[in-house]
Length: 184
Image 1: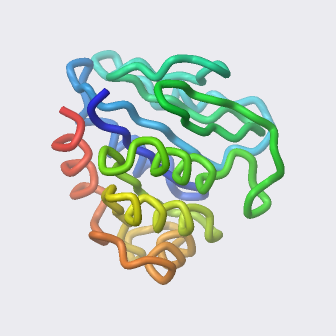
Image 2: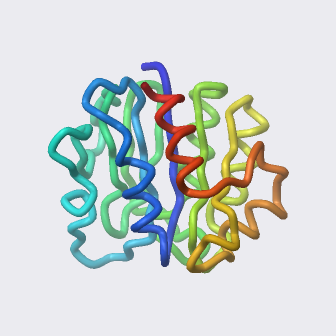
């Protein structure tokens, strides 16, 4: 396992996530984990993100081994956290009134994978991801934030910027290039 990418998003993040995943191919070694605020209802997000030549994309199972070259989407109404080599799912308390939430994912990734983590906060209407992104930086990982002026809902990027001094605030296109370079 070489690279762990954790991405947070909410309203307005579907197009940016698609753009970020677009350059990734089946040959890329990094694993991508998405905590998108999809709520408790049934979701087709993995099928919306899957591409013919892209990495396999889906909801993980609790206890599933982390595999290189895959994209994992937190299931509806479920937090996704990482342990060494394993994905854990739980229905713990909501964080920022959300489940799934980004902070539990980001904090766990930082704890166990340190400098191998690239954390990204995208468009959304609350502060989820800000604490987790700060933890990613504290543990030696890289913190990126979508440029607020480009975000449909800039609250998540703005809160991430104010809670931490991210390594970079970038356009979605530049984030996509950074993710590709980090993973492939």
